[in-house]
Amino acid sequence: MNKLKIYKLISLFVFVIFFVGVVAQNVLLVNAAPENPVAVSVGALLVNVEKVDLSASSCRLDFYLWFKYNPSEISQSEVQQFEFINGAPTMYVVDSNEAQGYLEYRVRGDFINSFDFSRYPFETHELEVKIEHKNLNLNNLVFVADPSSEIDPEANVAGWSLRSFQASVTEHSYGEETFSRMVFGVSLERPMISSFIKTVVPLAVITTISLLAFFMAPQNFAQRITLGVTTLLSATAFHLSLISGIPPTGYLTFADRMMISVYAIFLYNLASSVYIMRLVDSKRMEEAFSAKRKVLKFLPVLIVVLVVAQVLL
Image (cartoon, rainbow, N blue to C red):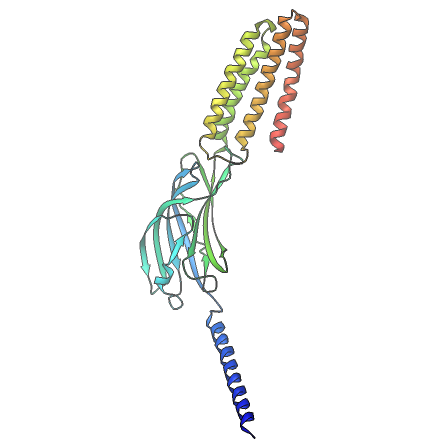
């Protein structure tokens, strides 16, 4: 065998050794990744909802947060490296037992939430707390919802009713990495009766006062128009006061749609009053009385149409 063939055989042998080494290294790296990520159980006890700021889309919550884990799989220092995605509250350790795999905090602070105001002022909101680990992705750690999570029976917030408390686990991706996300939430609902009394009843009173103009004689058109304009200004002021408690929205809320219906009734009232006034000025009294009767008969039809439109929308 000549030297050239020997050199070729040596080169081929070195290449094979190099190729096998690269493949073995990749296999070791793949096997190094945990096949079963560490499971950490997370639970919460909601003590109180201290404040709900609709204009700032935030809420202030006070709750206990605990972690249960296997100390042989993950250290307590690693468990502590979590973060709140939608807030930066203050917290301190209440109980810590690394041997038993238990860590508990008392948490209090503001959390940002995306509120839906499409049914304002009869809406329901979800107040959520979102937690993720800072470093360990889904391949290394997964959160598990502790079924003992609950809300304190004495928890309350002024002007609202607290409903169900939920705890769930979702996944959230940041580019190529996906993290396990723990989500705690409580349903917040406005009391239906008090909301109705505070919003619908005042509007109904103002609108009814305006509609009294239809029962005035056509000759008193000045008083009719004055009554209609005065009540219209009152309704406008009430509308501005009603929506001042929520942030600007790119869609119509139930309050906006309700006020549009009220404005339509006011427009009908003022337009009919001006038309009757013109008939009176032209000394066409019979036509004025006839027009008054016609617009009064059509008024219930208009109200029914507006109510049906509210239900369908």
